[in-house]
Amino acid sequence: MKKIRLLTISHISEIGGSDITLLRLLRNLDKNEYEILHLMPYPGPLIDEFRSAGIRVEIIDMPRIRLFKNPLKYIIVLLKFFPTVFKIKNIIEDYKIDLVCTFSMSSLYGALAAKLTDRPHVLFANEYLFVLRLVSHYFYLLSEKIICCSIIVSTMFKRSNKIMVIPPGIDLHEFSLQVNKEKVRQDLGISGNLVSMVTRLAPWKGVEIFIKAASYVKGNTKFAIFGQLVMGRERYLFKLEKLIEKLGLRDRVLIKAGGNKNIAQFMVASDIIVHASLRPEPFGLVI
Image (cartoon, rainbow, N blue to C red; front, side, top):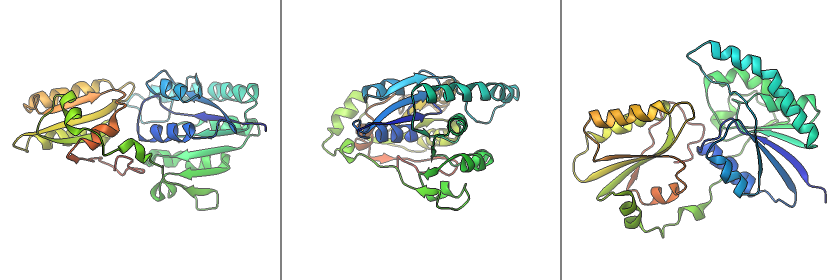
């Protein structure tokens, strides 16, 4: 039986909730039925995860839609738009791709490349941002289906049978209650009660509020932030560390930034998990 050749496109290469959902989805696709080529915009911690799952990964420069402080960056994104679309168009033709799937509304390239090559395009919508409403009609016109992670995300699009709501799945085996909590805490150098936050290290996730709240809690309680840095925003980690120092919390608040493959163990080992996002979450996988 001929395999379906699937081209999937990410807008970032860091580890976050939507990216973990994508990895789980592709890892569990039947490789006897699908041949997958995955595009990422730059090297990052997720690449090895995808490759270990038997997924071919290629790097192609794909600037994503976002709010920039420097307006010149919008010009750079615009100048790169059509060359990037045609690079993906060539990939679709060279690899004889059957179906193109984009996993973020921040990446506009795959939908148009699919249209130019007369291939079907599916959008997996995992964000809920006002700025992305500006491109929702673009994706609506160019996609065969739009799969939204929640009802709130689906409200960004015109109501029709093209829109589907499918919440992300969770592998319950990752969250085994057989985890040795004390061993995990010992490895982290933590004793006493543990209050944790699992998040991407971005300002809108409310990490600073979590740190400030920790200063009001007395007793033998430690606080841990398990998160992934956003590429290009490494200075935010320095800002968080300065805040911890300023509040005198160096011995009580731990930031463990990086891939953190053992997130499930950290969550099970925690007494309380805090979710502090400052704007609506598309789904809130941590919850």
